[in-house]
Length: 116
Image (tube, rainbow, N blue to C red; front, side, top):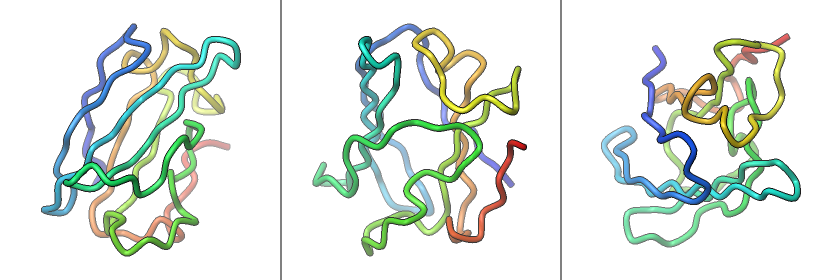
């Protein structure tokens, strides 16, 4: 089961706090205009970085190769509702047609790819 994490639209830099599998995490989103790319930093409850500056991609579990013990037990994945084959959201797409989901308690390595 995928749980949607609400994201604001048209905000080039924002942070949010969310609970994943009973633990608190901070997500920081940063849009780089020159690259037309979003980057995501994942931090623990104390705002200590677990993984910083990861490029946001659609259809592939984020942080799947990260072996930090503070990682959530499940996986985070972005999905483009209008174009399942899309690779990365542009500025105005994140929070609108590109949504962030969390699958609790699953290993990111075993997560299915959602795009073809």
